[in-house]
Amino acid sequence: MSSLLDELKRRAKQAGEFAPFWDFKENPEFVGRVVAVRDDPRSPKDSPRHLWDVETLDGQRYTLPSYVVLDRALAEQGAEVGKYIYAHFIGEGKKAGRGGRKPFLFEVTVMSQEEAEAHLKAPPKVERKKKPEAEPKVGEKPKEEPKPKVEEKPKAEEYSQVEFEKGKSIINTLFQTGYAELEAEKLRKYLEGQGVRIPLEDLCEKMGLKIEEGKVRK
Image 1: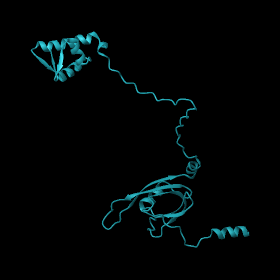
Image 2: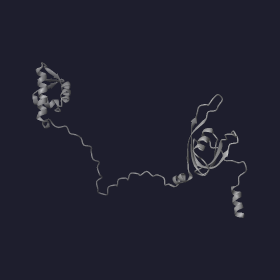
Image 3: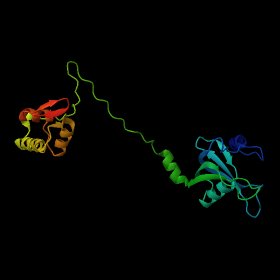
Image 4: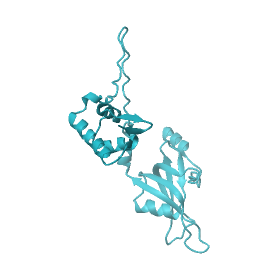
């Protein structure tokens, strides 16, 4: 009997004393459990709003204000004593009419006690860290990262005879049309466009032509 009385006295609260209101403007997100639901005495009797007494995950007690949008969302999603709720204040909406107040807008989720507590008991997700490479042993050379392969440009003699003949034919044709000299850079780009990969310098050397002052001459 004395043990029960002592425990009841320890838990006793002054009549009419309630937990402080949660300030959504200062702390936009609330996560916790519903411990009691009361009608808000300031709301109309024919459509009463509710004061939701809640407890945070670390055991702190608060009361959620009876904002119209918040109260309606909690009720529609089946919030009741024992269930867990998430309420996120996302800002103020537009006034419904002249003289009206801007409604507070919320994102709301309601979860059953069983589902919520299963999440609470689940071990936290741990990101797997990449194992550090083992340090080389004494006297062992560290592994060298493979160097990217660099495509070597073939030498003049490695080009096919077909390409040489094609390039030679193009240059000879240009000279035969009356050109005394050819612009080296333009000729180089033209040959590349025709699929001739032989460097212009190598091609001219084989044909006995000269490149002087940016011009290809006989």
